[in-house]
Image (cartoon, rainbow, N blue to C red; front, side):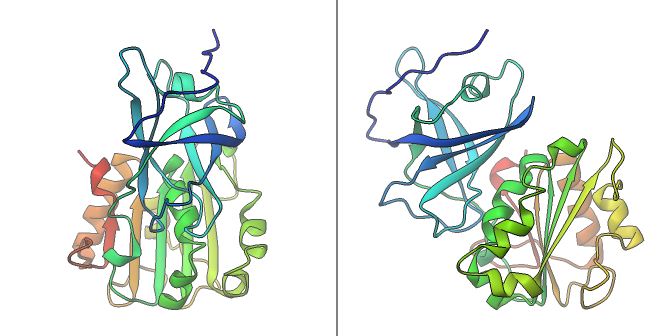
Length: 270
């Protein structure tokens, strides 16, 4: 049975009340949506914010969502899975343009460029909806001044899970701020692990066999802690496995207070 959303939601001093502007369902378990951006809302590329809906008793039902839009955009984009029986997503999946949501007033997070030392190549490794913050980071003009090459890797189970796959070229080619830089500095590496696709290996395997490194990418076909900087977002299994591999290679996890050579979103780690 479809969950109906209220036309309006009560005001809350702790949250902005924002209207949904667009919705796209990529398949039966993945969707994206955009909301209007309050004039006072500021964030760093890669940060997350709390989103939610009212529930009985008055306390909002909230979940953390990484912001997928660039920091200069007029709207805020989000990517979400549809969790069967999920308290929030079972309602949120029915959202339509014009519906209202709660938006936290203070975005935060550790998956930001400030947590990384300077380098030559930036690798953004994601699984599933972990792509979201990298859609923001890879459209940040500062990224292309700090790094010579930017590689977005997106690993999913099914081809239809490759959200924004067909839009990747257009997103960067039409971007008013970074289209010239992205044309020569940006690389996109999608991989599908459970259906036929031109690349079917998991991220760890792609690192080992060199498939994660495009042929036109400068530098070695391996991770080098001297010149490479890496961000991880997605499944806990991928993050734990890749973090362990990076530590063995000499990479050091960074934070806002102490930048390093790789970084993860600590708020989502058990």
